[in-house]
Length: 108
Length: 95
Image 1 (cartoon, chains in turn cyan, brown):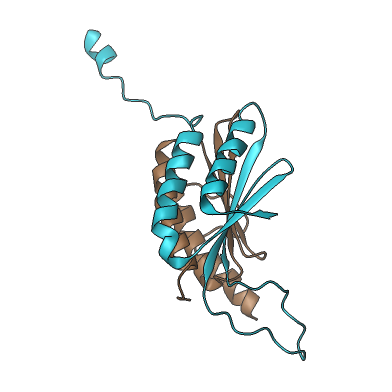
Image 2 (cartoon, each protein chain N blue to C red):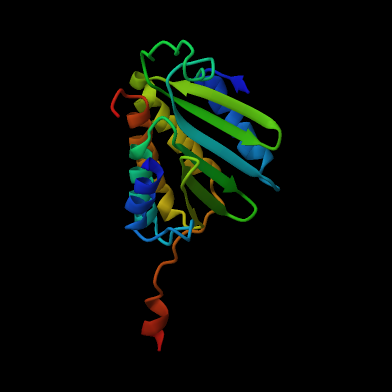
């Protein structure tokens, strides 16, 4: 898992989408992340220090390539804007809704 | 005990057997509820397959799994808005 800065993450994600154009799937996971780097210890052992701040962890994979990034509270708005526009431009194989055919009816 | 109560509260919105929900609205409502039950454990997946023109969504806490798939581009906007709410909540200190 490669943890990247936002700019780098978007650049790599664009590449992932591009590499999956012929075939393959791009998977993205969004999860709350409290900043811990160790697993939760067993009951009876010293617990982990209480997390200070909640963050948002974003992972993306395509075949064996994996990338991830962390978004802090203040950056969410900016990050989401970029993320959404990237998804909109990359997910362009989805079907557009067809307009109702009013003209052909009128021709009869 | 806790697991049972989750199962029943989610059962109210009728998807105990089917993991794929039929409409976006249904999925959004259920996924939001599932996330809020346990924000630290829940994760949200988006997978996109270009050659099939398909987006599949998943919200799971490893006990219940909710899924939804669509080919409709119109729903991308709704997904974006949902993702925004979700990310804002994740990166905040609310529970």
